Length: 374
Image (cartoon, rainbow, N blue to C red):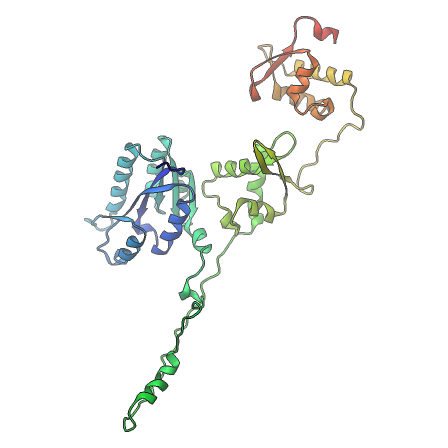
């Protein structure tokens, strides 16, 4: 059977994760990978971990018992690291999920990444930055718990058809008792005061604006548009703990919209359509003023020749991006040439030689005299 998702190993530090967070963590992992190994490490004979038994059976997690031979030393961390290295050398996985908020796993995360595998971290917001940055992605369990619906014990009404009549029980008992029997009225137990769960605390989307703008600046094209996926990838590559849910948004596009600082459009991209963004007029730096009158073909061609000359390096070739900068500095724009790209404009003149491809294209004036004649 062929699987589309990559196989991952999930290793859990029982001393640094709550039982309530296991279900949302596993659900989050299955969005990105297929879990083939589920192991949890700890001393389950201790009082604070003894309640894990039922939870482990529910999620088919294999417990690795590690006794605490010395007070103050966490032997389960060592067991987790040893197992992780054994699994890494088996070459059966494409990634690991380390569930812990402990900085002791920082070197483990970097070692796994050195072998080219992906590392996802899960833990609380108190996790040290060193461990967070050592992972490709680090997801805070607080964000996962805030997005889950509360269960019936947290104020959800009972399903339809469910009946509960504890208040009527004393009356029913009195009616059923014999006539000569002395019935002592039962005082109903006082209802336990249940405090409502604390409202999830989210950061305002405006606090992500600086981060979004830096990412946009680094991935935007020459026309000022940035592919939304590229913006997200850039942020995650530099901030492993970035998560739109921190700002109360379920998706990255929701965060972009809530900042109200970007305009979004759908444009053709590859074989379909994708979202592109750019800052709104109130935020985007003003574009250079366009020429009131398009230059003549002779003027634009002369500007191209001069731009190539100014951008020519010691090897006699000018990189296309350097030519574009020189051309822009001269007050000319690619749109004035009637072509969609600078490469097409340069090739259309017939005045230049070209080598390379993509962003590594180089140009120079032809040496056969055609440039002088132009």
